Image (cartoon, rainbow, N blue to C red):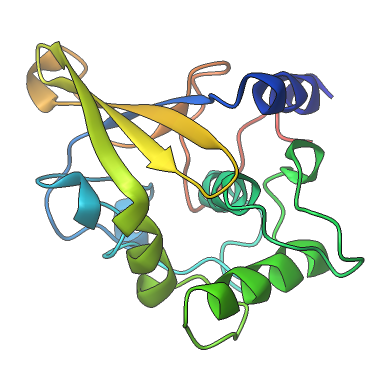
Length: 182
């Protein structure tokens, strides 16, 4: 429930904070987490797959659900994917909303978030600030909402890579969901 309350608050403010770290250019599920480096508009295009059969309950799925929320993807009942739908579980609702998102952006609507889908989403990323010490602020510019992420460089003193929630400091991993995901 703690995450759901945080997400509802985020929907009202339309800004969600996620912290990230720079990683080598070839990110994928074998790294274990969502990562990015170089230009922000290619941070997600080399990510692994999330779907109903791959990394179904994971922090990476939670990040994808933020994107669905930001772009106002439609659920099976015709309503918009909202903050309370972000539960880090790639169930039928997320699959339906993913297919809607893929159709909107001219992709094959298979309901699987792979390199093509993640790669299309990262076109909506923009660097909006330099925070120093290797940290940059990155914004996802959704068609309905935006959310911000902080991408930390290795030289920031945090000797690890990967996106994680600022609320729980739980990594957006492919192998598990943050403990406060409901």
